[in-house]
Image 1: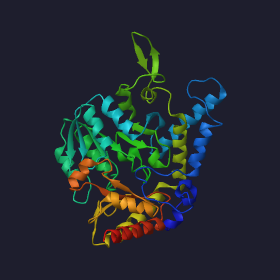
Image 2 (image 1 turned 90 degrees about the vertical axis):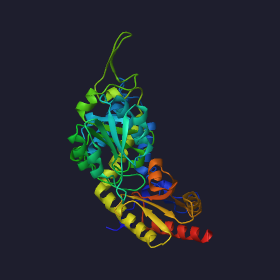
Image 3 (image 1 turned 30 degrees about the vertical axis):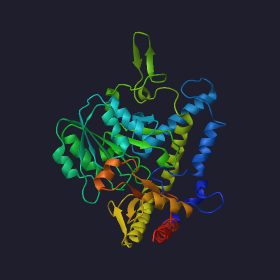
Image 4 (image 1 turned 120 degrees about the vertical axis):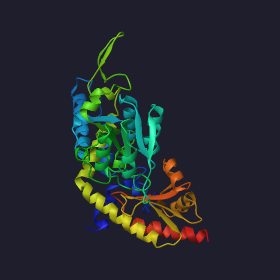
Length: 394
């Protein structure tokens, strides 16, 4: 299958500029464009289907509740989980915060040098002692080093399943084995993995998994936390309000079981249902096909950039849908600005991974990241834009 065969540009109305020209969107790692099927699902949920959930006795509320809980089941199916272990959150950031604050056995947490800020700051704020695992020369989390560092004082290991900067893929099964060998739990940040490859939390043997809808061709403002049932059951709620309670009194309140215990207040109803529609969309295409498609585009891009003697590439050769690079004498922000004139959108900056930039000894990178809708024309436009930028800078 060629990359052009899988590319689904026609499904995405956002990939055309105001004057009708193609927009070469290479910033999917930041947020993915939305297919028409997802947009339509949002419109229906906000329009003819709209009502509250879990509260109304009228028929439309009951139907909306069924749709909301069906979305939970779709998310669970996407990652090989049981829906009773899936908590709706505002995104992966809130999912990680939930664990950092509510996990009862706070101790030492082992992170890595490539983590996104959302997998660093919550642990600091919640009072954990943070240790940092180094990287290998090609940008992988060094699990040999992790094995040497882990002690019985560690109660949590929290790693990115796929790096948002380098595209490196964690050997999650080994990470789980190492964590469990000292009695720690493993949380995986799945923001970049869930849209790009098949994920089965049982096979990975992790304990928590955080994901975000907007990187999965769904809406912003919603994500999910998967956690093992016995762990969620042992965790107290970290926000209070309606929906997460059993009985409320001024002297004593009891709480609903998980996952409802962690879903205080009126939920993001339309976003949850649309999250489910996004799961349907990617499952119908097939995550194995998506992964192969993006791998071919990564290889093509790295080959083209690697042929330029003034370009430095970061991360492993076989990265998952992400290519980070620098051009000698050209700041990534300048490159991004000129590429925008060519209708090419990339990310330029530290990518919410300042410790990784410090590790690499650079202030920023340019990052091209791919999606279902990406194809060879996007790669060609990127290379043309880079050549033009180099001519401008002499």
